[in-house]
Amino acid sequence: MSRFSFTAFTRKKIMPSFDLKGGFESQLVRSISLFNLIMLGVGCTLGTGIFFALTETVPIAGPAVVISFVFAGITAGLTALCYAEVSARIPVAGSAYTFAYMTMGEAAAVFVGSCLILEWGIAAAAVSVGWSSYLNELISIMFGFEIPAALRTAPFLANGKDFTLGGEGYINLPAVILVWVCALLLLRGSKESTTINTLLTLTKVTILLLFIFITIQSFNFENFHPFMPNGMQGVGASAAIVFFSYIGLDAIVGASEEVQNPSRNIPLAVVIALLIVTSVYILVAVSSLGAQAAPDFVGQEAGLAVILERVTGGGWAAALMSVGAVISVFSVTLVAIFGQTRVCFAMSRDGLLPKFFSQVHTPTGVPRVGTLISALLVTPLAGFMPSHLLWGMVSMGTLVAFSAVAVSLMILRHKHPQPTKGFRVPFYPLTPILSILACGYLIFSLTETVFITFGIWVFIAALLYLTQGIRHSKLA
Image (tube, rainbow, N blue to C red; front, top):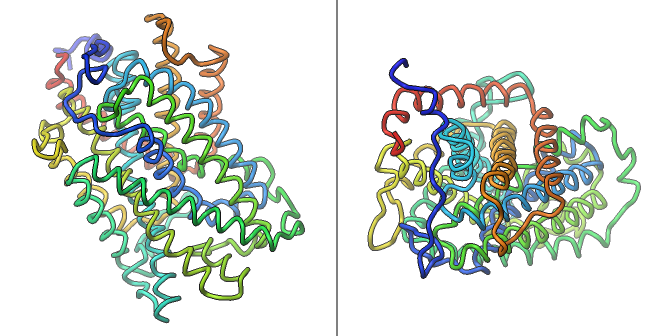
């Protein structure tokens, strides 16, 4: 290590330069419109949280999970404002990784980049695991049989400090199949995949609004007593888990080099997507708890479909919700793999990952090898890991990345005064400071197992950087 000076860890990328067509130089094709960009964020965020989060969080927080969603939404909102300003000024691939590289230096960028890779890869796996439950529910309703537990359940279990081999299954095969279907679709190009995502997202929003309309008619206020059985500790722990639901904000920024008029469209898409998603989350959470008592959420698979079946007394509503989940959650896995490949693309282009991650297939404008490798990395997580551990790891990666964005904004404002045009964060510097504090609170609400697993991942990332990345960096 003596051949490397401390400056290797603090060297920074220069700010991007403008071109006449896209606003900033880009190696990728700018084919994503504002509407499709909003749908990209809503599609990833909305399907990530609400279809699965209640089963994971109501047993922890009780009916007070509504407060968990509000707190997570406020935290995401503070970060969204920081994202809006920084991404308008640095609209290039890599999102928080690139922001950190240009403001804090290479070592910080590698740390943030490893968090983003972790966040997106595990998000794809976690969502595909939840998708498998809804697929099984749909098959059960329509055909009267279920996928064998051995083929749709993880062999590992995680609960608090324990992580053991003892699950009832051998592999979650539907989850693995979903990962590869999404990867193959992404290989066709960003424009095609975002158009499909838009259609799936509109379907998802429609079905969730229908869910709210049906369940609100069976609302029972008694289900909200006791409201906070585990106190604020349960609310905080649940908020930390549901925060993974907001990774769609990073998906918007991760597509920066493929967005039309990025300086205008990225801030707009971030704010609009956040407002849509938070509103739907809270409405669905309230209507679900009004229709079903909190204890009934424990261990419940395909929760929203089961609630509809109980409320309507028939299978048609549950089948409709299962169809909606199967179709729409597909888009979440699609966007998650998309996000991971774009972070790897940015890091590879900077020399911090092998070159094949940034090799773009000319006819489609897609990093094909990187997409295939991402699918390979996600496959064992989707097939063998328990969902609870996966959700916690997604939240950890997301919270660290969001904190880095707030820090990047403060450094950017200090070293590069804001131009007269463009979005400006209100109540600066209070907004980024509150964002960092809120993210920190949620991070320390996660379980010990998540911290241990995250520590192992960061150690591996640091080892790879010190032995390979630091030598091959383009800034070397």
